[in-house]
Image 1 (spheres, one colour):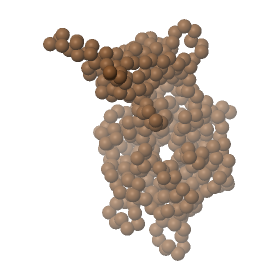
Image 2 (cartoon, one colour):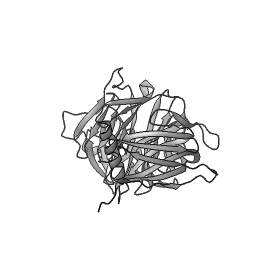
Image 3 (spheres, one colour):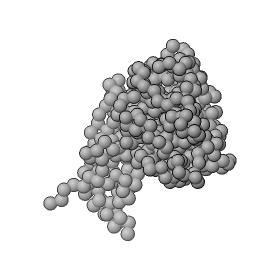
Image 4 (cartoon, helix red, strand yellow):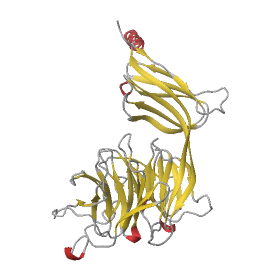
Length: 406
């Protein structure tokens, strides 16, 4: 029987052709290079990886003809040396991708804002998001009851909202009036959504930035209600995730405004939440990251709402969370006044607590991230901060496609 298994493994290995191309991004490494050997057995893909320096390691699969990147393993902080990483063979069969060894450096770049209600002024901004299509930063200027749109360089573009109640005498109010908007999120159809905190609703603005009504709860819905909505996030399927602060839970709402399911609820188990504030969704696996401020952690759930893990390292009152394109986790804490960079396993890689001019953060509230920049609402200082995000490292291509048989 053992002989048959060995023969079967040899036949399968012979049917596959693996190519490894090395690309070194760090010229200071004179002799050592990142290299990968890939062996495939009947049920296991065995990556043997040599790391010339310490860094974060990821194994990524790419889809031909598309920009889609599937994170198969990592990112994990790894020491210099040679390591073995086994994966199920079915995950890489007929696929190709890269092995990446990288480090991320974050530096303070610029700041926009001061206290007030002018074009480039804010009053305790508590949420923000970045629109990659229009190249704009959208800020929930909570104390001024408005949404402010800024260019990437901080130039003022426009504002939306203004104080008002969503219910009452319709003849005396504007429907687009806001009352303590807590967060803003860019939608999949060029919309943006606002969590209108005191009006207890999620409202929609369209691609022309015009008010389009309530997403949740709908005006004729007498059963569903929101209680102090906070953080918002739109996932890759255009579903809207809402942090409901007073109810200690997170709701998943469809683009048409139907409630799909909920996560959390008040309690002391790992599955439950206390005073949650913000949320982000991993693009690679759909994991849900929730800033569970009352429990001093980032709670991580799978895409169906089952608890996976938590991040606690150096955290006291985490209030903002964002996942970057490499799968690393950014967290801001309004008690330690720090911006930290974490692996998904909860290990802190680095942190910042002040700008380049020496001014310290004060009650940072929310984060948005691109491939090259990080934006943060520094609520207590009434400003929006921009940080440069520099990625350096090496990558190696791998391929696991069947050979052509004649």
